[in-house]
Image 1 (tube, rainbow, N blue to C red):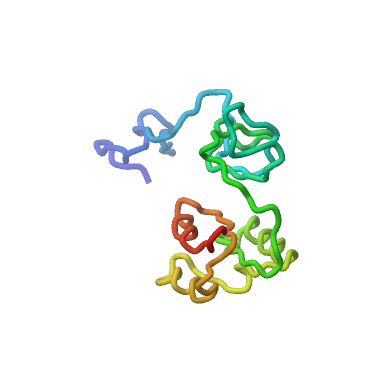
Image 2 (cartoon, helix red, strand yellow):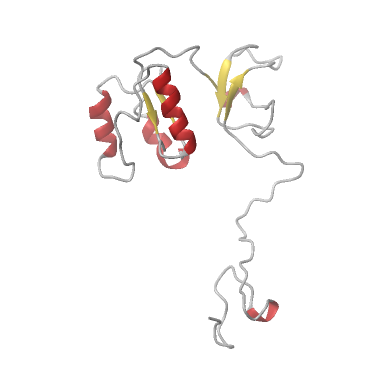
Length: 172
């Protein structure tokens, strides 16, 4: 249904005179980030360091790491990151360690649960928590005990990661 001739289009829509009389098209919101080209998406990555800058002493070639913010983009074979955004990953996992898989219902989360079980880890597939439910953090703490979880796999960091980090065990 089209608005009356004298009404204004809703925010983000073109006026009906500028488009087909049957369709209102949304315009690009002003808050959209338009990156400079060429552009490679992706910020969070994990992998093995290929090389380090001359002033970097905390890491070396061959270290297993992850970063929370690449400079070059993450959907690449090699990514560039500032050393203050890079963190060491454990060299290996040990059967019996625990992993909290946020978003275990999606494709990556299901794969994370399957891989965790294959390595003998206690994971989110053993216990299920709804992050929108009341007191879900308390329920996780009760399930994992005082030690906390050894690892977290996070699919929605902007929603869950701050709470998840508080659930990590020492050195997790």
